Amino acid sequence: MSADDPRRIDGVGALSVLRRGLAASPELSAGAWQTALMALSVAGSKLLVPLLIQLVMDLSITDGGVRMGRTVVLCLVALALVLASIQLGRVTYFRLVRTAEDVLLGLRTRAFAHLHRLSLAEHTASRKGVLTARVTSDVETLTQFAQWGAVAWIIDSVQIVAVVAIMAVYSWQLTLVVLVLHVPLVPILKWMQSRQLLAYEELRTRVSDTLAIVSESVHGVEAVRAYGYREPMRRRIRNAIDAQYDQQMVAARYFSLVMPTADVFGVMAVAAVVGTGVWWGDAWGISSGELVAFVFLCNLLIAPITEIGEVLDQTQTALAGWWKVLDVLDTEVDLVDPVVPVALAAGPMDVRAEGVEFGYREGGRVLHGIDVVLPAGASVAVVGETGSGKTTFARLLARLADPTAGRVLVGGVDLREADPDDRRRAIRMVPQDGFLFDTSIAENVRYGRAGATSEDVDAAVAELGLTAWVEGLVDGIHTRVGERGEGLSVGERQLVALARAQLADPGLLVLDEATSAVDPETETTLERAMERLAAGRTTVSVAHRLSTAERADLVLVFDDGWIVESGPHDELVALGGVYSGLYASWLGGTRDPA
Ligand SMILES: Nc1ncnc2c1ncn2[C@@H]1O[C@H](COP(=O)(O)OP(=O)(O)O)[C@@H](O)[C@H]1O
Ligand SMILES: [Mg+2]
Image (cartoon, rainbow, N blue to C red; front, side, top):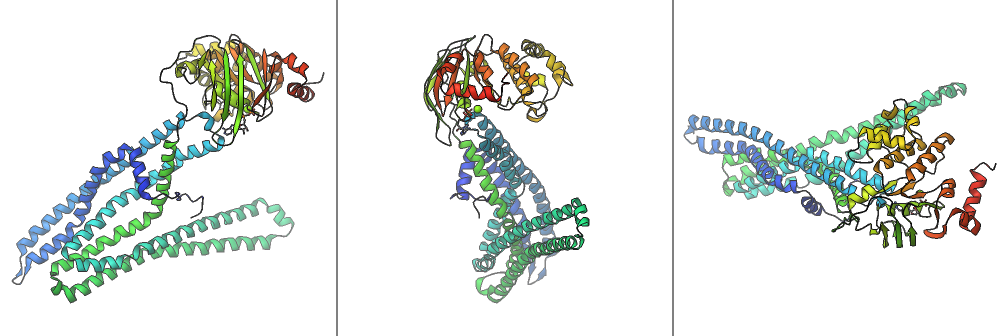
């Protein structure tokens, strides 16, 4: 198996996955007992037929001839039992599927809930992809397995064990003969199955090759004609189709091999049983009824073995998927809610960072020794080059992560101690991409505060001076924004995000300005909206437009994770340091020199 093989679990056996899985899913053990019992009775009922045949032969066929009465009674009993077993089988299957679905539902719910508890700062783009895959496609692998593989394992393994046990009661010698003949079957089936999978994978490649060449020849029809390239093109297509045909045959050959191979083993086992049974039967004390029953039992052995061989591969994939989902559940939650929550006051709040350091799970430290005091009601601009730690600093202020050293106090309360509900109400972060959900503008704004009415939404929009903009849209405030807000421009998405923050009415507002350019008209609307939103609150803006910094009371200049300069705009320009450099290049580039 290669490193990215989905079936790979590093140094972990099926048993440890099971143990961990059982611990994580209480539903599993709850339903498992009953399910196992019922599977046992289903397998048992299949064994009735050979048992009854043995009884009929040994009890009804005597030296004096056939006792019809006994035979008929036994046959009726057999009929009743077989019918009952069919019904039991239905019930069992239903129970199995229900248990499996309960387990998966629980697993999915818990994995999702856990994802939401993880520190947001851990969610890098690639981690997000991985984590989403865990709760979607990995759980899906498990679902597929539950519908066939898991059921097959339970019913088949019970049947195999029961058949072998009954065989052993009849005659351990014959049982040994049967087992020895079946042992090679499992590795052979496993080998054939892996070849078959490879063959089908190869076939898929061939099919897409053919499609690509055909599509190319159609799209490039002018070039093909113009350069007289028809004959070579035709040859390429014919070759691709031939290759696909050959591969189809290879795949079919493996497929057609499986059933006959299993049958060969079955027939060999039966022949061996009949041969040895007839030869040594008397010496081993085997009755003719038992011998016939043995032949039937052999046939009950081959089907479950073949089926288990078929689900082996699926099982490996499912176990690996299960392990990965369990890994999500085991990822440590590092944002712990306080035991004794401290309330946050309403109104503008001051912010103090004391010896704050931070590093993401991957990579080194990105913030070093941050010590700042931001007075209540101040507007603060955070500037610095890309990667200097501005967004990270903003995240810590909203407690999307905790500092690895030092502490952040808002309104005099350590964020780790602050009441989570208060924190969500009183501190708002407008992220850089102003994430919107795929619904209307009104709904997106309404997310700002639980229980907000349409009037509240309209009021928030009006307070930021956005009514005219909203009314200019196709459906006004009910315009849908599309997936992730793709229906709006970057600047418009930010407007919606600002209205959302306005509705929340926080005492501390943290804004991460978008880096991408915004058209001049939206820019003006944005600046005005931001100014209104900032009124009466402490505002920390990660500023990419230095016009924001020009207006701010205080500018913090970040460089490589350190705050290298801080003070009002004019002072910093006069200082002639990092900030004056940034400002000069901004004046020269973005802003019209006039
Ligand atoms: N989620 C993350 N996981 C790991 N490293 C990150 C993450 N986010 C940012 N970083 C790293 O932290 C440093 C600071 O990034 P950031 O705070 O986004 O800077 P800025 O906002 O100033 O561009 C960069 O080196 C960046 O690569
Ligand atoms: Mg940033």
